[in-house]
Image (cartoon, rainbow over all chains, first blue to last red; front, side, top):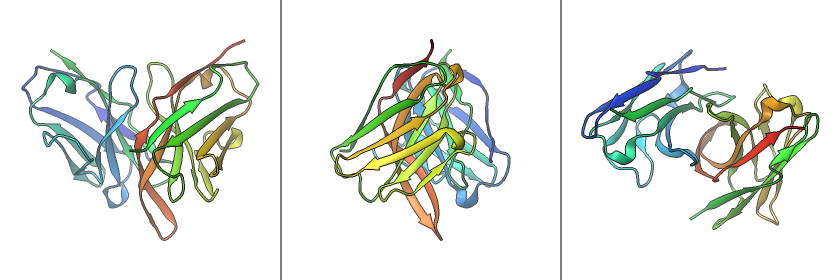
Length: 108
Length: 124
C-alpha cells in the first residue's frame, strides 16, 4: 500500500501568514489522485482539494493544492482564524485508500 | 444536499461484533460508492472499505477478515459489521459518500460528504 507522510507534524503560524503543508508518498500516486481534508475538533473531515489541485465546492480560493508523482503541497495563502485545524492528505490512486498522519496547524 | 448519519451501539464488548448503520438523506444511495472510515481517539484516519449501491465491495486488507459491508437500497442505508473486536477497534466511525471515477474497472474516489461520526468504545 502507499504510505503518505505529512510534514511538519505541527505548524505554528499567525493569522494573515502563508501556510505550506507537505504530503509525500512512498510511491507515485497515479494520475495525481490525491485529496486534502480539514478537520476541526469534534467534527468530521471536510474535503478541500481533489485531483491534487481542484478545489471542492464552496472552498475559498485561499486554499490551493499542487504537486505530482510523490510530492504534494497544500497552500493556504493568508490564514484566517477558522483555518487553524488538522489537515490530512489521502491518495485514491490505488487500493487500499490511505491517509497521511495529519498536520496540525496551530495559532502562534 | 446529501446528508449521512451513523447509528448503532456506542459500547461493544471484546470478541463481539460491532454493527453500525449509515442512513443517507437528501439523495439516493443509487449510483454511488459508500465508505466506512475510522479514527481512533487522538489519531489519524483509516479507510475500512466501500460498497457500491449494487452490492460490490472492497475492503482494506488490514481488516478484510473481520469486515462485512452491506447495502439496503430500499431504506437508503448501508451497514458495517466488524467481528471479533478488541480495544484497538475503539474509534470514531464515519460513513462517507465516495466521488470520483472508475477507469477500466478500478475505482478512484475521494470522500465527500461525511457523516458526523459515532464513537464506538470496545470495553468489558
